[in-house]
Length: 482
Image (cartoon, rainbow, N blue to C red; front, side, top):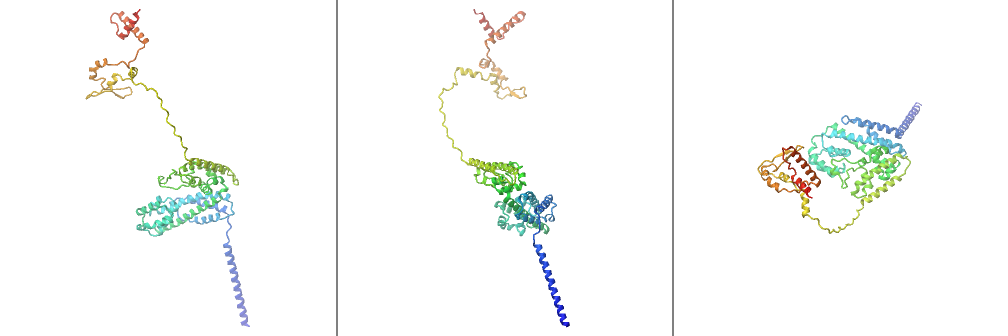
Protein backbone atom coordinates (compact mmCIF):
# COMPACT_ATOMS: atom_id res chain seq x y z
CA UNK A 1 0.00 0.00 0.00
CA UNK A 2 2.78 2.32 0.78
CA UNK A 3 4.17 1.97 -2.73
CA UNK A 4 0.77 2.84 -4.25
CA UNK A 5 0.41 5.90 -2.03
CA UNK A 6 3.90 7.04 -2.98
CA UNK A 7 3.03 6.55 -6.66
CA UNK A 8 -0.13 8.69 -6.41
CA UNK A 9 1.72 11.34 -4.42
CA UNK A 10 4.39 11.56 -7.11
CA UNK A 11 1.66 11.74 -9.80
CA UNK A 12 -0.08 14.60 -7.98
CA UNK A 13 3.20 16.48 -7.68
CA UNK A 14 3.91 16.04 -11.40
CA UNK A 15 0.42 17.26 -12.33
CA UNK A 16 0.80 20.25 -10.03
CA UNK A 17 4.14 21.11 -11.62
CA UNK A 18 2.65 20.88 -15.13
CA UNK A 19 -0.28 23.10 -14.14
CA UNK A 20 2.07 25.68 -12.66
CA UNK A 21 4.19 25.66 -15.84
CA UNK A 22 1.09 26.15 -18.00
CA UNK A 23 -0.03 29.06 -15.82
CA UNK A 24 3.41 30.66 -16.13
CA UNK A 25 3.36 30.21 -19.93
CA UNK A 26 -0.09 31.82 -20.16
CA UNK A 27 1.09 34.76 -18.08
CA UNK A 28 4.20 35.16 -20.28
CA UNK A 29 2.04 35.08 -23.43
CA UNK A 30 -0.22 37.76 -21.97
CA UNK A 31 2.80 39.91 -21.14
CA UNK A 32 4.21 39.56 -24.67
CA UNK A 33 0.81 40.31 -26.23
CA UNK A 34 0.42 43.41 -24.10
CA UNK A 35 3.96 44.57 -24.88
CA UNK A 36 3.45 43.99 -28.63
CA UNK A 37 0.25 46.03 -28.70
CA UNK A 38 0.77 49.67 -29.84
CA UNK A 39 0.75 52.16 -27.05
CA UNK A 40 -2.12 54.58 -26.94
CA UNK A 41 -0.68 57.98 -27.86
CA UNK A 42 -2.01 61.36 -28.85
CA UNK A 43 0.02 63.13 -31.59
CA UNK A 44 -1.32 66.52 -30.55
CA UNK A 45 0.22 65.99 -27.10
CA UNK A 46 3.51 64.58 -28.39
CA UNK A 47 4.21 67.33 -30.93
CA UNK A 48 4.34 70.20 -28.38
CA UNK A 49 6.84 68.19 -26.33
CA UNK A 50 8.97 67.62 -29.43
CA UNK A 51 8.82 71.34 -30.23
CA UNK A 52 9.98 72.25 -26.72
CA UNK A 53 12.88 69.80 -26.91
CA UNK A 54 14.04 71.20 -30.24
CA UNK A 55 13.76 74.74 -28.88
CA UNK A 56 16.00 73.82 -25.96
CA UNK A 57 18.51 72.36 -28.40
CA UNK A 58 18.57 75.49 -30.58
CA UNK A 59 19.31 77.60 -27.50
CA UNK A 60 22.53 75.66 -26.90
CA UNK A 61 25.87 77.08 -28.02
CA UNK A 62 28.20 75.14 -30.27
CA UNK A 63 31.11 75.23 -27.84
CA UNK A 64 29.10 73.84 -24.92
CA UNK A 65 27.27 71.12 -26.88
CA UNK A 66 27.68 67.49 -25.79
CA UNK A 67 26.37 64.09 -26.87
CA UNK A 68 24.15 63.81 -23.81
CA UNK A 69 22.23 66.90 -24.96
CA UNK A 70 21.61 65.66 -28.50
CA UNK A 71 21.12 61.94 -27.84
CA UNK A 72 17.41 62.41 -27.06
CA UNK A 73 16.71 63.56 -30.64
CA UNK A 74 16.63 60.07 -32.18
CA UNK A 75 13.54 58.86 -30.23
CA UNK A 76 11.72 62.06 -31.18
CA UNK A 77 12.54 61.46 -34.84
CA UNK A 78 10.92 58.02 -34.55
CA UNK A 79 7.82 59.63 -33.02
CA UNK A 80 7.56 62.10 -35.90
CA UNK A 81 7.85 59.30 -38.47
CA UNK A 82 5.09 57.45 -36.67
CA UNK A 83 2.85 60.53 -36.72
CA UNK A 84 3.16 61.24 -40.44
CA UNK A 85 2.42 57.59 -41.23
CA UNK A 86 -1.00 57.87 -39.58
CA UNK A 87 -3.74 58.37 -42.19
CA UNK A 88 -6.65 59.24 -39.89
CA UNK A 89 -5.14 62.40 -38.44
CA UNK A 90 -6.60 65.80 -39.28
CA UNK A 91 -3.99 67.47 -41.49
CA UNK A 92 -5.32 70.98 -40.93
CA UNK A 93 -4.94 70.65 -37.16
CA UNK A 94 -1.56 69.00 -37.56
CA UNK A 95 -0.11 71.56 -39.99
CA UNK A 96 0.67 74.42 -37.52
CA UNK A 97 2.79 72.09 -35.39
CA UNK A 98 4.57 70.66 -38.43
CA UNK A 99 5.27 74.15 -39.77
CA UNK A 100 6.75 75.06 -36.40
CA UNK A 101 8.89 71.92 -36.24
CA UNK A 102 10.49 72.26 -39.70
CA UNK A 103 12.31 75.57 -38.98
CA UNK A 104 13.48 74.13 -35.64
CA UNK A 105 14.84 71.07 -37.45
CA UNK A 106 16.74 73.36 -39.82
CA UNK A 107 18.23 75.25 -36.90
CA UNK A 108 19.20 71.96 -35.24
CA UNK A 109 20.88 70.79 -38.45
CA UNK A 110 22.83 74.04 -38.60
CA UNK A 111 23.84 73.65 -34.94
CA UNK A 112 25.06 70.09 -35.48
CA UNK A 113 26.88 71.20 -38.63
CA UNK A 114 28.76 73.86 -36.66
CA UNK A 115 29.48 71.27 -33.96
CA UNK A 116 31.02 68.96 -36.59
CA UNK A 117 33.11 71.82 -37.96
CA UNK A 118 34.37 72.54 -34.45
CA UNK A 119 35.33 68.89 -33.90
CA UNK A 120 36.93 68.29 -37.30
CA UNK A 121 38.71 71.59 -37.97
CA UNK A 122 41.92 70.35 -36.32
CA UNK A 123 42.21 67.51 -38.86
CA UNK A 124 40.90 69.30 -42.00
CA UNK A 125 40.40 73.06 -41.43
CA UNK A 126 39.51 73.96 -45.06
CA UNK A 127 36.72 71.39 -45.46
CA UNK A 128 33.98 73.68 -44.11
CA UNK A 129 34.73 76.34 -46.74
CA UNK A 130 34.83 73.82 -49.59
CA UNK A 131 31.63 71.91 -48.69
CA UNK A 132 28.91 74.32 -47.46
CA UNK A 133 26.09 71.72 -47.36
CA UNK A 134 25.66 70.06 -43.91
CA UNK A 135 24.67 66.66 -45.34
CA UNK A 136 27.54 66.57 -47.83
CA UNK A 137 29.94 67.71 -45.12
CA UNK A 138 28.78 64.85 -42.90
CA UNK A 139 29.15 62.24 -45.65
CA UNK A 140 32.62 63.47 -46.59
CA UNK A 141 33.74 63.13 -42.97
CA UNK A 142 32.41 59.56 -42.85
CA UNK A 143 34.35 58.71 -46.02
CA UNK A 144 37.55 60.29 -44.73
CA UNK A 145 37.32 58.61 -41.32
CA UNK A 146 36.14 55.25 -42.66
CA UNK A 147 39.64 54.33 -43.81
CA UNK A 148 43.16 55.52 -43.19
CA UNK A 149 43.66 57.58 -46.34
CA UNK A 150 47.17 58.63 -47.23
CA UNK A 151 47.98 61.53 -49.54
CA UNK A 152 49.12 59.09 -52.23
CA UNK A 153 45.72 57.32 -52.16
CA UNK A 154 43.54 60.42 -52.49
CA UNK A 155 42.69 59.67 -56.14
CA UNK A 156 40.79 56.55 -55.02
CA UNK A 157 38.26 58.80 -53.28
CA UNK A 158 36.94 60.23 -56.56
CA UNK A 159 34.10 57.74 -57.23
CA UNK A 160 33.00 57.59 -53.58
CA UNK A 161 32.80 61.38 -53.27
CA UNK A 162 30.64 61.58 -56.40
CA UNK A 163 28.35 58.61 -55.65
CA UNK A 164 28.01 58.71 -51.85
CA UNK A 165 28.55 62.37 -50.97
CA UNK A 166 26.96 63.58 -54.26
CA UNK A 167 29.65 66.16 -54.93
CA UNK A 168 30.10 67.77 -58.32
CA UNK A 169 33.25 67.18 -60.33
CA UNK A 170 34.47 70.70 -59.59
CA UNK A 171 34.00 70.16 -55.84
CA UNK A 172 35.80 66.81 -55.99
CA UNK A 173 38.72 68.37 -57.85
CA UNK A 174 39.05 71.27 -55.41
CA UNK A 175 38.65 68.94 -52.40
CA UNK A 176 41.36 66.54 -53.53
CA UNK A 177 43.76 69.41 -54.25
CA UNK A 178 43.11 70.82 -50.78
CA UNK A 179 43.63 67.42 -49.14
CA UNK A 180 47.17 67.26 -50.49
CA UNK A 181 48.09 70.44 -48.60
CA UNK A 182 45.86 70.89 -45.54
CA UNK A 183 44.56 67.40 -44.66
CA UNK A 184 46.47 66.05 -41.64
CA UNK A 185 46.46 62.33 -42.42
CA UNK A 186 49.28 61.56 -39.98
CA UNK A 187 47.42 63.06 -37.00
CA UNK A 188 44.40 60.80 -36.32
CA UNK A 189 41.61 61.85 -33.99
CA UNK A 190 41.39 60.50 -30.47
CA UNK A 191 38.72 57.94 -29.58
CA UNK A 192 36.38 60.39 -27.82
CA UNK A 193 36.36 62.95 -30.64
CA UNK A 194 35.91 60.22 -33.24
CA UNK A 195 32.92 58.81 -31.33
CA UNK A 196 31.34 62.25 -31.04
CA UNK A 197 31.77 62.88 -34.77
CA UNK A 198 30.23 59.55 -35.81
CA UNK A 199 27.22 59.88 -33.49
CA UNK A 200 26.65 63.51 -34.54
CA UNK A 201 26.76 62.43 -38.20
CA UNK A 202 24.11 59.80 -37.52
CA UNK A 203 21.79 62.29 -35.82
CA UNK A 204 22.33 64.90 -38.55
CA UNK A 205 21.48 62.45 -41.34
CA UNK A 206 18.33 61.34 -39.50
CA UNK A 207 17.27 64.97 -39.03
CA UNK A 208 17.85 65.64 -42.73
CA UNK A 209 15.74 62.61 -43.65
CA UNK A 210 12.84 63.49 -41.33
CA UNK A 211 12.90 67.04 -42.71
CA UNK A 212 12.51 65.66 -46.24
CA UNK A 213 9.73 63.31 -45.07
CA UNK A 214 7.82 66.14 -43.41
CA UNK A 215 8.08 68.33 -46.50
CA UNK A 216 6.87 65.46 -48.69
CA UNK A 217 3.97 64.78 -46.32
CA UNK A 218 2.95 68.44 -46.35
CA UNK A 219 3.27 68.58 -50.15
CA UNK A 220 0.86 65.67 -50.55
CA UNK A 221 -1.88 67.51 -48.63
CA UNK A 222 -0.97 71.17 -49.11
CA UNK A 223 -3.74 71.83 -51.64
CA UNK A 224 -6.25 71.92 -48.77
CA UNK A 225 -4.86 75.14 -47.31
CA UNK A 226 -3.16 76.85 -50.28
CA UNK A 227 -5.09 75.99 -53.45
CA UNK A 228 -4.11 79.15 -55.34
CA UNK A 229 -0.40 78.73 -54.67
CA UNK A 230 -0.58 75.05 -55.66
CA UNK A 231 -2.28 76.00 -58.92
CA UNK A 232 0.47 78.49 -59.75
CA UNK A 233 3.69 76.70 -58.75
CA UNK A 234 2.68 73.16 -57.82
CA UNK A 235 2.26 71.36 -54.51
CA UNK A 236 5.94 70.50 -54.00
CA UNK A 237 7.24 74.06 -54.37
CA UNK A 238 4.31 75.38 -52.31
CA UNK A 239 5.18 73.00 -49.48
CA UNK A 240 8.82 74.07 -49.57
CA UNK A 241 7.90 77.76 -49.45
CA UNK A 242 5.39 77.32 -46.63
CA UNK A 243 7.77 75.10 -44.68
CA UNK A 244 10.43 77.79 -44.92
CA UNK A 245 8.08 80.56 -43.78
CA UNK A 246 6.11 78.54 -41.22
CA UNK A 247 2.62 78.85 -42.72
CA UNK A 248 0.46 80.61 -45.28
CA UNK A 249 -0.04 83.71 -43.15
CA UNK A 250 3.68 84.04 -42.42
CA UNK A 251 4.55 83.56 -46.09
CA UNK A 252 2.03 86.20 -47.20
CA UNK A 253 3.93 88.79 -45.11
CA UNK A 254 7.20 88.25 -47.01
CA UNK A 255 7.84 90.89 -49.73
CA UNK A 256 7.84 89.58 -53.28
CA UNK A 257 11.43 90.76 -53.83
CA UNK A 258 12.68 88.29 -51.17
CA UNK A 259 10.79 85.21 -52.39
CA UNK A 260 13.17 84.38 -55.26
CA UNK A 261 16.08 83.76 -52.86
CA UNK A 262 14.18 81.22 -50.70
CA UNK A 263 15.85 77.85 -51.10
CA UNK A 264 18.92 78.95 -53.06
CA UNK A 265 22.20 77.13 -52.55
CA UNK A 266 25.17 78.79 -50.92
CA UNK A 267 28.07 79.49 -53.28
CA UNK A 268 31.55 80.75 -52.69
CA UNK A 269 31.25 83.11 -55.67
CA UNK A 270 28.23 84.37 -57.59
CA UNK A 271 30.36 84.94 -60.68
CA UNK A 272 30.82 81.20 -61.16
CA UNK A 273 27.16 80.38 -60.52
CA UNK A 274 25.30 82.88 -62.69
CA UNK A 275 23.34 81.42 -65.60
CA UNK A 276 23.05 82.79 -69.12
CA UNK A 277 19.81 84.52 -68.17
CA UNK A 278 21.58 86.50 -65.44
CA UNK A 279 19.55 84.92 -62.59
CA UNK A 280 21.45 84.64 -59.30
CA UNK A 281 18.53 83.84 -56.98
CA UNK A 282 18.04 80.20 -58.00
CA UNK A 283 15.58 79.26 -55.26
CA UNK A 284 12.53 77.01 -55.16
CA UNK A 285 10.54 79.15 -57.61
CA UNK A 286 13.26 78.97 -60.25
CA UNK A 287 12.60 75.23 -60.72
CA UNK A 288 8.90 75.63 -61.57
CA UNK A 289 7.48 74.85 -65.01
CA UNK A 290 6.35 78.45 -65.51
CA UNK A 291 10.01 79.44 -65.74
CA UNK A 292 11.84 76.38 -67.06
CA UNK A 293 9.43 75.81 -69.96
CA UNK A 294 10.36 79.13 -71.59
CA UNK A 295 13.57 80.38 -73.26
CA UNK A 296 16.54 81.28 -71.10
CA UNK A 297 16.46 84.89 -72.25
CA UNK A 298 13.21 85.61 -70.38
CA UNK A 299 13.86 83.63 -67.18
CA UNK A 300 14.77 86.74 -65.20
CA UNK A 301 11.58 88.62 -66.16
CA UNK A 302 9.41 85.55 -65.58
CA UNK A 303 10.90 85.03 -62.12
CA UNK A 304 10.05 88.60 -61.08
CA UNK A 305 6.48 88.36 -62.36
CA UNK A 306 5.97 84.93 -60.78
CA UNK A 307 7.18 86.18 -57.37
CA UNK A 308 4.61 88.97 -57.49
CA UNK A 309 1.77 86.60 -58.41
CA UNK A 310 2.75 84.02 -55.76
CA UNK A 311 2.65 86.74 -53.10
CA UNK A 312 -0.88 87.70 -54.20
CA UNK A 313 -1.96 84.05 -54.21
CA UNK A 314 -0.61 83.56 -50.68
CA UNK A 315 -2.58 86.55 -49.44
CA UNK A 316 -5.75 85.19 -51.02
CA UNK A 317 -5.17 81.75 -49.46
CA UNK A 318 -4.47 83.30 -46.07
CA UNK A 319 -7.77 85.17 -46.17
CA UNK A 320 -10.11 82.38 -47.27
CA UNK A 321 -11.39 79.39 -45.29
CA UNK A 322 -9.79 75.96 -45.35
CA UNK A 323 -12.72 74.30 -47.09
CA UNK A 324 -12.76 76.93 -49.85
CA UNK A 325 -10.88 75.62 -52.89
CA UNK A 326 -11.66 78.53 -55.19
CA UNK A 327 -8.78 79.05 -57.66
CA UNK A 328 -10.38 81.57 -60.02
CA UNK A 329 -7.79 84.25 -59.25
CA UNK A 330 -4.90 81.81 -59.64
CA UNK A 331 -6.22 80.74 -63.03
CA UNK A 332 -6.48 84.38 -64.12
CA UNK A 333 -2.94 85.18 -62.94
CA UNK A 334 -1.48 82.09 -64.58
CA UNK A 335 -3.15 83.01 -67.88
CA UNK A 336 -1.66 86.51 -67.61
CA UNK A 337 1.80 85.08 -66.98
CA UNK A 338 1.53 82.74 -69.96
CA UNK A 339 0.37 85.57 -72.21
CA UNK A 340 3.22 87.86 -71.11
CA UNK A 341 5.73 85.06 -71.52
CA UNK A 342 4.45 84.42 -75.03
CA UNK A 343 4.87 88.09 -75.94
CA UNK A 344 8.37 88.20 -74.45
CA UNK A 345 9.48 85.10 -76.34
CA UNK A 346 8.20 86.35 -79.69
CA UNK A 347 10.65 87.79 -82.20
CA UNK A 348 10.58 91.58 -82.57
CA UNK A 349 8.62 93.09 -85.43
CA UNK A 350 10.48 93.95 -88.63
CA UNK A 351 10.75 97.72 -88.92
CA UNK A 352 10.39 99.14 -92.43
CA UNK A 353 13.47 101.06 -93.48
CA UNK A 354 12.59 104.58 -94.51
CA UNK A 355 14.20 106.16 -97.58
CA UNK A 356 16.33 109.25 -97.18
CA UNK A 357 14.51 112.53 -97.85
CA UNK A 358 15.08 114.41 -101.12
CA UNK A 359 17.79 117.02 -100.63
CA UNK A 360 16.62 120.62 -100.95
CA UNK A 361 18.33 122.58 -103.72
CA UNK A 362 18.79 125.93 -102.02
CA UNK A 363 21.49 128.48 -102.69
CA UNK A 364 24.40 128.26 -100.33
CA UNK A 365 24.95 130.92 -97.75
CA UNK A 366 27.58 133.49 -98.63
CA UNK A 367 30.80 133.47 -96.65
CA UNK A 368 32.46 136.55 -98.17
CA UNK A 369 31.68 140.03 -99.39
CA UNK A 370 31.69 143.51 -97.95
CA UNK A 371 28.74 143.02 -95.63
CA UNK A 372 30.09 139.76 -94.27
CA UNK A 373 33.51 141.33 -93.70
CA UNK A 374 31.89 144.18 -91.80
CA UNK A 375 29.96 141.61 -89.76
CA UNK A 376 33.13 139.71 -88.86
CA UNK A 377 34.88 142.91 -87.83
CA UNK A 378 32.39 143.32 -84.98
CA UNK A 379 33.74 140.15 -83.35
CA UNK A 380 37.35 140.69 -84.21
CA UNK A 381 39.93 140.71 -81.41
CA UNK A 382 41.17 144.15 -80.45
CA UNK A 383 44.79 145.10 -80.92
CA UNK A 384 45.46 144.98 -77.16
CA UNK A 385 44.01 141.48 -76.93
CA UNK A 386 46.10 140.32 -79.83
CA UNK A 387 49.23 141.65 -78.14
CA UNK A 388 48.21 139.98 -74.88
CA UNK A 389 48.10 136.62 -76.64
CA UNK A 390 51.68 137.06 -77.85
CA UNK A 391 54.91 136.66 -75.86
CA UNK A 392 58.29 138.24 -76.48
CA UNK A 393 61.11 135.76 -76.83
CA UNK A 394 63.60 135.58 -73.96
CA UNK A 395 61.78 137.92 -71.59
CA UNK A 396 59.58 137.31 -68.57
CA UNK A 397 55.90 137.97 -69.03
CA UNK A 398 54.21 140.55 -66.81
CA UNK A 399 51.13 139.35 -64.92
CA UNK A 400 48.31 140.90 -62.92
CA UNK A 401 45.69 139.50 -60.53
CA UNK A 402 42.03 139.83 -61.35
CA UNK A 403 39.22 140.33 -58.85
CA UNK A 404 39.07 136.56 -58.17
CA UNK A 405 42.77 136.31 -57.36
CA UNK A 406 43.69 134.50 -60.58
CA UNK A 407 46.91 135.42 -62.37
CA UNK A 408 46.50 136.78 -65.90
CA UNK A 409 49.41 137.20 -68.32
CA UNK A 410 49.76 140.49 -70.20
CA UNK A 411 51.91 139.14 -73.02
CA UNK A 412 53.38 141.91 -75.23
CA UNK A 413 50.73 144.49 -74.33
CA UNK A 414 53.13 146.18 -71.82
CA UNK A 415 56.48 145.29 -73.34
CA UNK A 416 59.13 147.62 -74.68
CA UNK A 417 58.65 146.25 -78.17
CA UNK A 418 54.98 147.24 -78.05
CA UNK A 419 55.95 150.76 -77.02
CA UNK A 420 58.35 150.94 -79.95
CA UNK A 421 55.79 149.83 -82.50
CA UNK A 422 52.78 151.32 -80.73
CA UNK A 423 52.50 154.39 -82.97
CA UNK A 424 52.59 152.32 -86.12
CA UNK A 425 50.04 149.88 -84.78
CA UNK A 426 47.64 152.65 -83.79
CA UNK A 427 47.55 153.94 -87.33
CA UNK A 428 46.66 150.49 -88.60
CA UNK A 429 44.03 149.89 -85.96
CA UNK A 430 40.60 149.22 -87.42
CA UNK A 431 37.46 150.78 -86.06
CA UNK A 432 35.29 147.82 -86.87
CA UNK A 433 34.81 146.74 -83.28
CA UNK A 434 34.59 150.22 -81.72
CA UNK A 435 31.40 151.48 -80.19
CA UNK A 436 29.32 153.41 -82.73
CA UNK A 437 27.60 156.65 -81.69
CA UNK A 438 24.10 157.45 -82.74
CA UNK A 439 23.13 160.89 -84.05
CA UNK A 440 21.40 161.79 -80.80
CA UNK A 441 24.47 160.84 -78.80
CA UNK A 442 26.73 162.85 -81.10
CA UNK A 443 24.46 165.88 -80.71
CA UNK A 444 24.53 165.58 -76.89
CA UNK A 445 28.32 165.25 -76.84
CA UNK A 446 28.78 168.29 -79.08
CA UNK A 447 26.51 170.39 -76.86
CA UNK A 448 28.42 169.23 -73.78
CA UNK A 449 31.72 170.20 -75.42
CA UNK A 450 30.34 173.60 -76.40
CA UNK A 451 29.16 174.30 -72.86
CA UNK A 452 32.53 173.25 -71.48
CA UNK A 453 34.33 175.57 -73.92
CA UNK A 454 32.11 178.49 -73.02
CA UNK A 455 32.73 177.87 -69.33
CA UNK A 456 36.48 177.72 -69.76
CA UNK A 457 36.54 180.85 -71.93
CA UNK A 458 34.54 182.68 -69.28
CA UNK A 459 37.26 181.88 -66.79
CA UNK A 460 39.88 183.27 -69.15
CA UNK A 461 42.67 181.01 -67.98
CA UNK A 462 42.16 177.98 -70.21
CA UNK A 463 41.86 177.08 -73.84
CA UNK A 464 38.84 175.41 -75.30
CA UNK A 465 38.64 171.64 -74.78
CA UNK A 466 39.53 169.38 -77.65
CA UNK A 467 37.36 166.54 -76.40
CA UNK A 468 35.50 165.05 -79.32
CA UNK A 469 36.65 168.02 -81.36
CA UNK A 470 35.96 166.42 -84.64
CA UNK A 471 32.44 165.55 -83.56
CA UNK A 472 31.74 169.07 -82.30
CA UNK A 473 33.14 170.81 -85.35
CA UNK A 474 31.27 168.54 -87.67
CA UNK A 475 28.08 169.29 -85.76
CA UNK A 476 28.78 173.05 -85.88
CA UNK A 477 29.30 172.86 -89.59
CA UNK A 478 26.00 171.10 -89.98
CA UNK A 479 24.27 173.77 -87.88
CA UNK A 480 25.83 176.71 -89.80
CA UNK A 481 24.52 175.46 -93.05
CA UNK A 482 21.47 177.44 -94.24
